[in-house]
Length: 373
Image (tube, rainbow, N blue to C red; front, side, top):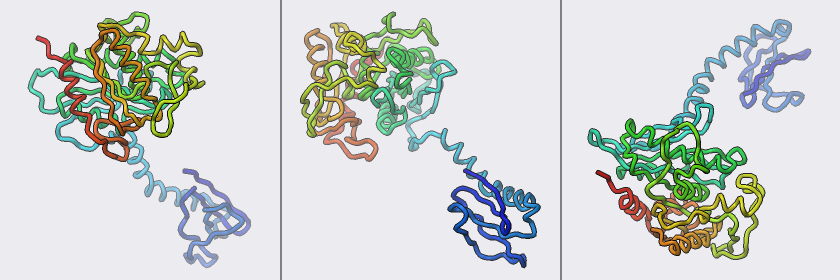
C-alpha cells in the first residue's frame, strides 16, 4: 500500500493507493462530499483546508492514526493466513505444514499427512510425494499432492510432500539430493512420526515422477547421494509409483492434439540448464539408464491423452523393465490427460477420471510395503 501527502496554493491532500479519503473541509469548516480533481493523479482525494495548509502534520497524523487503527488488524490477519495450511479439515488425518527437512538455511519445506487414531506404538508405512512442474515450478501443496497425501493418510500411510530446488538452482543432482533427503528425513524421524523405516515408498507426477524413479533406481548410490544433513541414513525405498514421469530425457517426443506421440522433441534450453547440454549428461539423469533386475517394484500410470509428456516415455520404461526381468506394472487410463490424480482428470477443477485409479495404487503399495517382523 502506498501513502503520499502534498499541498498546493488551495488544497492539502492525502492519498493512499486504492483508498479514497472520504471527506474534505471547506473554508467554513463544513464537511462536504468527496470530490476529485483532474490535476491530481487518479484516486487522489483532496482535503480542502486553507487553515491547515501551513500545519499539515496535525491532520496528517490524525488521518494516518485512524487508518492504522482501521486497517492494520486486517493486514495482520492476511499476513498470518499466508502460512496457514490450505487443507480441508479431515477427522482421519493430521497435517503438519512447512516442516524443515533440509539445511536450516534452505527455504524448501515439507508437509506431513499422518493417520489419526493409530494404536499406541503402531508403525505405519510411509510415502514420499514429489510434485511436478517441469523441474522449474510447482509446489508441494498443489491440489494433486493434497489429494495424494490425504488419501494415503486416510488409508494408514504417513505421507510427506516436499519442495525441492528448482530451475538452475536445482541443477542435477541437487534436485535429486533434495528428494533423497526427504527419504532420509523420514528414516531419521521414524520414531517420532510412527514410521516403519523398512516400509518407505516414493511417488510423484511428471517431473516428480522422473525424480521418484531416480530416487528408487539410485538408492544409496554414493555417486548420487547427498552428504548432509542425514549422514548414515539410507535413501533406499521399497517401491515406486510413477505418474507420467519423464524416463529418458533424450528421447522425448511431440504429440498431436489427441496425445499420440509424433516426431522427436528437442531438449529445451531451460532443461539443459538443469540436466546438462549433451546426451551423456541426459543419460546420467534418466531412469532408463539405471535399469536392472533387482530394482524396487515400479507402478507406472500414464494417460493416453497426455500432450505434455508423450506416452512413449512410459512405454520405453516398461519395455526396459520387462527386458531386465524387473517387477513392474503399468496402467493406461484411456482418456486421461497430463497431471491426473487418483480420481480426477483435472485435480484443480475436480473433473473426474473415467475411473478412480486410487484403489490400484493403494493395492500396489500395500503389496510391496509388506510389514516385517
